[in-house]
Each structure stands twice: as C-alpha cells, then as structure tokens.
Image (tube, rainbow, N blue to C red; front, side, top):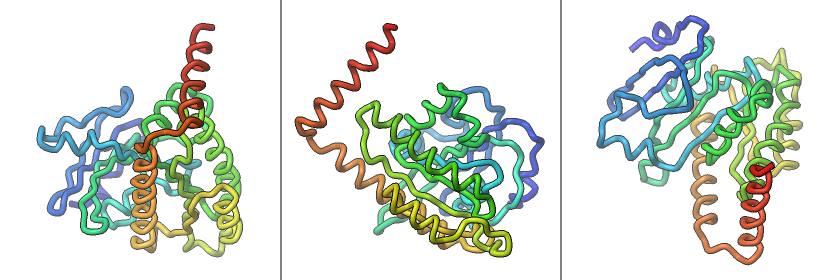
Length: 253
C-alpha cells in the first residue's frame, strides 16, 4: 500500500483510524464529528484491544512533526506532509515477549490552540494515560510551550487526585542541524527539571529512536498503573476526597 497517496488529503478535519497487525494495515478516513469512537471496521473479537486502558496522547505546536513521528512508528515510513487530520491509531508492540495493544490520539490542532477550548482539552487529558510532548529543535517557541503543556496536564490530573502521570519530551527534526534553535542540552535540562524522560529524534531519518521512545513511555504507563492499583494510604484517600468535594462545590456554583 502506498501511504503517500493515501495520505494526500484536502485540508479538512478528518479522523484517520489505522489498525496495524503483523500481516495487514487497515486505514479508514472519516469526518471528525465528535470525540474518538470505535472504528466501524473493527471486528467484535478485536474490540477488547480498543477498550484496553493504555491510551497515549501526542501533543505539540504546529509543524513540529508529531504526526510524522506517530506514522513513522506505525509504518516505519517517513511522510513529510499531512492534511488537517484528527487521528486515532490502534497499534500493538512486543515488549519483553508480550504483545501490548494501545491507542494513540493525534489531535488535528496544536496544544497551544486547544488551551482556549477547555472542554475538548479536558477530554483529551482525561482519556490519556501517557503523553508525548513534541517540539521542533528548529522552533524555540514550540520548545517554550512544552513546560506550559506539562504544567497544564499535571494540574488537570492533580485536580482529580492523579499524580505522576507519565510524560515524555521529544525534540524532533534532529537531522536539521543547520536550522537548530534549541540545543540538546536545553532539552535534557528541561527533562531533568520536570522529571520527564527526554528524547531527541529525527522522524525523517531514524525509526529505531522513535520505537525506543514509545517503548519507554509504555513501560512507564505500566509501572504507573501498577502503582495506582495499590491500596492508597491516608494521604491519597484524603486528597481524592478533597478533589471530589471541590469538584462538587464548583459544579454547584
């Protein structure tokens, strides 16, 4: 299948569902009319994979290459240009000998623009178990936005009593050294300051580094979920109850 021809789309908001198995890749394009839904082509026996609670949200400013990174993971191919798409992907990876299905949501708009659309953005953050925050090493503004994104994600999750949500920072376009505006050291220091793993990749040139990044995030999500399932201590119970009562008071205003 020639994905270059498949992905030359008019600039309209679409949902692109890609379902990947070891032998086939199924692509379906639909008009975006609401929040993510189960694609119609998924068979009943595959529905459990979509219901699986491992959901990854990929965010970033315009033109940082977040869709290129995601499609590179799915197809091992680099496709440089896309239409304005809302994309939901169903994918499986092998980690430690186990097949792990997960879902990736790649919004059609940047996180900066969605900050003004609180209901849409809250749905995204509530849906996700882990986050990939992408910036371009050639665009300092996109790098500066990452710290704000991290703060917003954590404050939203924290209001619901959720702590230490897995987030990775990804500097893309490493191949464009002649256009670099953000050094690797700056990305590394941001990762240390925010306690987020940092990766610098090139969607155009290197599939393996992107695979490594997603594998690392999925492992962190697994660890995070195991920790959440453990019995909460007194501090966790008090914080959860406080979040519930605060929300109720806000709703009653």
